[in-house]
Amino acid sequence: MRPGPLGPSGQSGAARTTSRKGPGVHDQFDVTLEDADLLGEVELTTNLIIAASEADEHLTTEEIDRILGVHPLRH
Image (cartoon, rainbow, N blue to C red):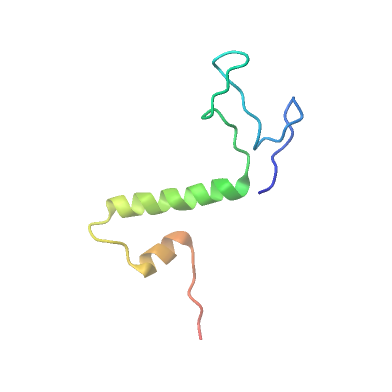
């Protein structure tokens, strides 16, 4: 995982947390994510979830590959 840009405290974006609950209170769900690889994986997963929820049947391997942008090897 690549670290994100440094924030005002000098911590990387991936580790930086800010709390809206007040000083000294850590909110484990209030995290700034600045990781392009992670965001890409979230987008792919989201696309799969949407396609699966709209499908009447299970997605085929070929449909999943198409959604993920996977191209089969040609022999």
